[in-house]
Image (cartoon, rainbow, N blue to C red; front, side):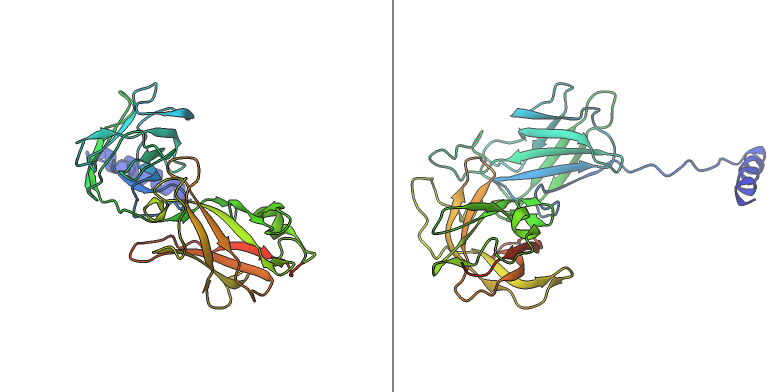
Length: 299
């Protein structure tokens, strides 16, 4: 009955010559977040996601190598590089956002590089500037707005609720991905230590390049300034105790621009069981991730 009344009411209003408001349309806009956390503020030297409220292309594909303009003509320009002016960012993939717009994964270069860590171009970030999403002709409007970036906002790559990475046995060299660690119910997989040697968590991040080594051939000398990783006892509902910083023996270039590797050594005396893992960055924002890592008894 309600539906019939609504239809009749609309017809009645139209008959009186009064216009009926159209269904609410999305206001053309976009946001920029860090790709691995889908949260801001966006960092330079990191993978970022541009999310538009309206479609700007009908493409749905990945690009390897990355492109600065897609086959259909989509581009994302940043005015954040004060040494270059408006510059097209490398696009990694593009597709529907799932909420009516478009999701564009890009890489935002910076001026931190060395050795094999070569930026596609050197961008001296100014922490802010006009960004433009150049839409495909006939698909949607081009969008422009100021976006503020930060030098660092590290977040961990994930595999479900676990970090993307692996447990490394310091004695045997055995590696076990965290999904396997977390699915173990014997209490033996991914031990906190082996034969008295503390084992490692090998993690991968984006947005933390500021804290890394200047080149793969130049080792980082711990303790590293600024970035850290901490574990807390956990349960399915979240952390159940305080976070404790772990020893970080390396943090730096992981083979791809935009991705860093952290070698975290589990503290002596760590109690086995389910843990929550987080990253911290002194003086900079860091993700609110609290990822699941299950550790076994000492071997």
